Image 1: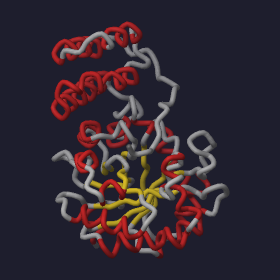
Image 2: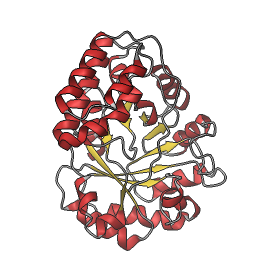
Image 3: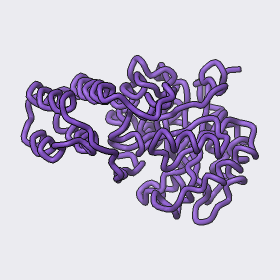
Image 4: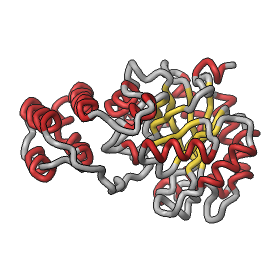
Length: 332
């Protein structure tokens, strides 16, 4: 009953995946406003939480419209994870604690966290149980891959369910596949058949059409979109409205909303931070190169806004970009 009170799985759930350096509070607030059902914090180190890192605590902040809100943690030691969860217990407005068991980045794996847990399923189960037993939040979830070097996805998924998780998200690659191997959507479908908890499909979902196909093929309860939303957060608006196309003025509105939220949250520092977003937002627009050159020369908040406002309001969109942003999952 608690699950249904917080997340409505009677229809497909659209979830923003956590991506280091991208899915901060301003970005999450925008995708939430324009269609995402659930937003997740950037992945946080349990060690950093347990030892009171102020930078990490700042990353816990949520936008008022992020309801529900999930915080993702990574950890390898049950005692450290327990202490991290106790810190989260003291934070209001968190609905879900999510355990990352999928990040393939070496600096995470080398600490025994992320997808490294897929090599030690008993420990992974103990950590999930520790979160479930310690947390005062309504829900516990887990993000997994299909295995470490080889697929053993059904064993992993069943362990997640047996350890008490309320739902899970599945990235359809092994750790060895990182972000380049072909996504195995058949394996995600097999997991959906094997467990009774909701399953969210993840991996290379970069368009409205692809999301619809993945939902149909896997029978998953929702999709989690990460890299596909960078430079195109309107994918959530498309999914929510059931439209394969996006009005240019909606693109414009989302981009300007994102910039305004960046300045609101970071102050003037938001200007240089937003440049990387302009580089992705401008793909497919006539005159994109000149815009990128222009924003690289501007530090003033108002001048930067004026330039991008004019560009995205008046420039012509000429085609979809095919590049995928090179984004990792690692925490700082």
